[in-house]
Amino acid sequence: MDVAGYRARWDRRLLWEAASLLSPDLRDAALAELPAPPARPPARPAAEVAERLRAAPSVRDGDAVLDASGPLDWAGLAAEHRRAPFGRTQRRALVARPDCPDAFLTELLTPWDSGVANRRGGPMPRWALRTAAERIGEMRPSFLRAGLSEETVEEMILGASHLDLLVRAVDGYDHNHHPRARAFWEGAGVLLWSRLGADRAAWLAASALLPRHPWTFAHLVRAARRRPAVPAERADLRVLAQAPDGVLAEVVAGLPDRTLDAMAEPARNLRARGVLTGMIVDRLAASGTPPREPFARWAFGSSCEPATRVWAHGLHPSLDSSNRNAAVYDVRLRRLLAARFPARRPTDLVAALRSCPDAIRAEALLTAACGTEGSPDWRALVRAQRRRSLPDHVLGALVARAGFPARLARALPTRGSIGLHQMVAAQSPEAARAAVTALHRLHNTDGVLARIRATGILPDEEILATGRPARDVLVFAYTLSRRTTPAEDGFLGGLVRLVEEAAREAPPGFWTALLDLLPDFGGTLPEMLAAARERR
Image 1: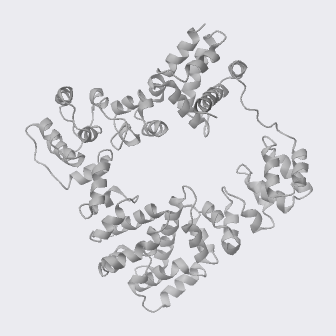
Image 2 (image 1 turned 30 degrees about the vertical axis):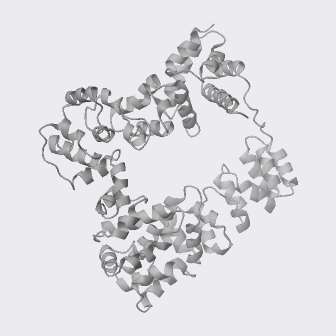
Image 3 (image 1 turned 90 degrees about the horizontal axis):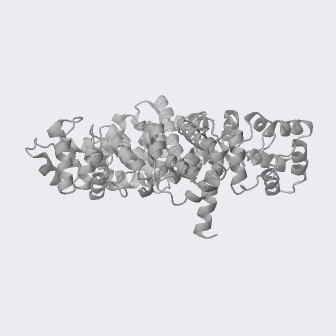
């Protein structure tokens, strides 16, 4: 399918989704006008689904049966299983369904069968995670990663019969599992802290043993307490970083840079290196350890805290450059860095700002002129912008100041690190309005709108009334409708009211007109609805 055909199909889907949210009479009228949506498989009786599933020769065939059976009657399938228990092939197909209810999932996994459980990719009951940890040698690493969370990590660590296998699973990779990797090491640190206290020798032993320990956590603690002194260079920083501040700072202070780099290699060689390295340098900074060149190098490209980036600033050119770029849109980072470069109160703020090399110095000047939260003379800055555009990094430094005017908001670039993406657009009402009224010029429209809504800087009614083009507003509504309903979400509820009001007053052909207008219409959603209503 060519690009035009794909876009046309996508436009039809946007209107189908919008129509599906309306009251039944308007929904039926819309679907009667619009090209028919792809047919969904009809719901089949549970007895028929069970019969077809039992006849499936393989798990993949069972998956195909369930996919073709429409919305599943889980209560009916559970009754069929109680009448005549499904075989292993059928249970493996059923547990893989993300919508399989917990109660039925428990029935399918009783008695326990690791081969059946391994097909589960979604949430699991806590009892199943405990059983999986006990029989960890039979479990797929992806199953273990799916079960890890801040709520379950300590239970899984304490229940694992072989810690090294749990570490191997954590070291693997699934899309977006990085927070779970950090949760694992921090959870292990909490457990070690409660058992080892500030025992330096025991922490060094545990840091060396844990990643490859073939027995239980309790065995690890006993081994760490009685093990002879372990050289500090054998410690894994993912574990040592969890030690009490005094222990961590003392150990690191006595090690050369080359040794520290080697200790960090296990974390820096993984797909989750950004999160894990960020965890390590965050702890080093928080422990009072003096900053060093390797720490600045690790901080560059990691997901560490702004305070950590400031702690290591000035020790590595890549981090310093990254900090200067990020300071344009990260208010906290910019203000922390500006505190390291205090400026005198300028006699001519506009001239001084024009001469600033970056947003950090601009923030320092603004702080000297009007305090951390104060506002500059906006009229003077608007006049200066009319005469000659202010540098982009200066505009970025001004966005979060109270009263940031619309004239300067419209001058903000829409792409790149200092564009109107999530962080900048949500820093002031006028920046948000400039973004909402030019959605087609933004790189990540859904992200911008989600951030604006999360901060509450603009009401949903204003976004719906002024967002342009209308198609981007409908795309965002489609994204929301995948996880919530108009009754639960104010944006979707407002959209439904707008569309229903227009549809009730519109003549026949309203939805066909919308479909014709949607691809190229540059105005707002209310304007597009009015234009479709007026078409003949």
